[in-house]
Length: 246
Ligand code: ADP
Image (cartoon, rainbow, N blue to C red; front, side, top):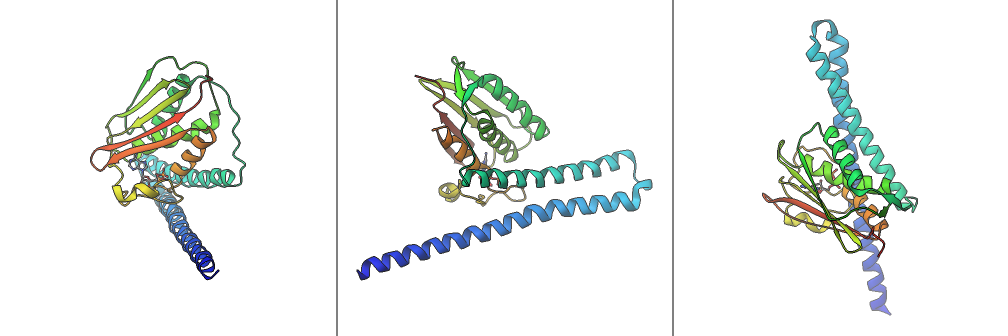
């Protein structure tokens, strides 16, 4: 009886510790991810307000671009928090329908190129017949736009990101392979947790929510996600989705 009570207390303490850790990661990331873009917006607006007449067209454009970029960054974080909230409340529904995988992935590749201002060229490669798939397009969008934007974000500008789609029986197998900073081994076990970022991200902006959202969307499809990565070797995420009727 006493052993059982001890075990219950130990588990409650462990849960409490995890919750506290999550709360402190949440506070630090959300405040940083709001404070930084707000600071950028404030200083750009002040420069425009006080020195508008003295700035040339190029300088004004640069400040407007800063405001635009910072606003997008805040909007993206809000969107991620909302999507995750919906997923946690069980309200992120899985509504499969016919999907043209090759066309969708081409579109998402183009979109991620323009969102990252063509930071890294993406080499899309397909193998086998990918027609006749059934999936949930909005969820697929979350999956691949997150993986593609991470690949570009954590890689040196100009390095190639390979996006490969192939068919394996009833599954579609997607691989997003970059030549970026990699994920240090110590961070591997917790990389899909909320607000969790690796130790080597430096000043690269991010919330630590994208991969968790990606994983939830993969699971809603009944699929699997895995990765391999070594610092200096780049990172390859593999997503396997059972989208073809067998
Ligand atoms: P973030 O908004 O921080 O990018 P994610 O949940 O998408 O959040 O990713 C979690 C963490 O995983 C990132 O902060 C980063 O440390 C690491 N990561 C994800 N994708 C890559 C990648 N392609 N290359 C290197 N590190 C990555």
